[in-house]
Length: 343
Image 1 (cartoon, rainbow, N blue to C red):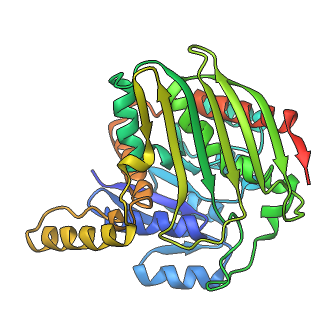
Image 2 (tube, helix red, strand yellow):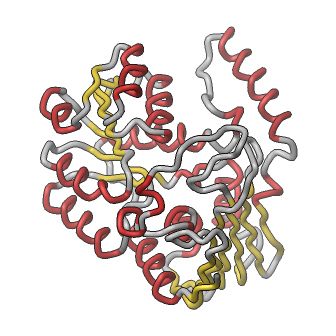
């Protein structure tokens, strides 16, 4: 079965999803892409895909099974509501919403129409995080007492070597819903939810190093409800690193040892890229399935999560728990409520 798919929003993430889907052509056929940018749509037409400036026209004119939504935060609820009218499976980039109330509204829309929705929590698919989860489930380090998470990136800002404009909505609190906490904290709080279940936020400090309308860094502390695991999260938009450098790590401390994402990640991402390129070259000439984006290590997670989305859509099985994503949004709301602002 080849699924028929439409993509709504072809910015950086939408284009990455398009690339992944093209590489999975035995499983999915991209029937249409909708975006406001005529230049973007012109580039997409070279793949022989129908393009639309209005995604409603795409929904009306294409026979689809599922849709990827890759739109700014303030457009997500409306787009999910519109897509739900066509009884399609939905993949939406994180965050699910701008706040917890909006996330509840989205859940109600999905429940009312009977659609299935999956949120793009791709950090669960990082190879080193998968290994940590396996070790955690096997109880290799005993009872977890303390966890720490760090994710420092450039946020909406580009490196001077590769400049690009910042979208206006990104720094508008009303349209974005927030800054680094919602943008980066979502990933980390989702991992914590996956590892330890529901948690309560006990502390948050918001920083505004760059004098932006939204916070550009934050420290959050949570405590899990079931086991009392205390977790510390540090996020920030102030990094000027360039790919493949990636300032992300997870450390879990248990009664019998510890787990670190850095232990499982490649020591040299440049060397890793070369090795993966060689592996995929050998697979290509021996007619084996290529593992796309593995040379990037972390970007491979986008390809893997879409493969799972297609598997769920094909099989008709239940999607990952949407309630878990509501729990994440609830933690984010509480972090903003408790947040003490440091300039």
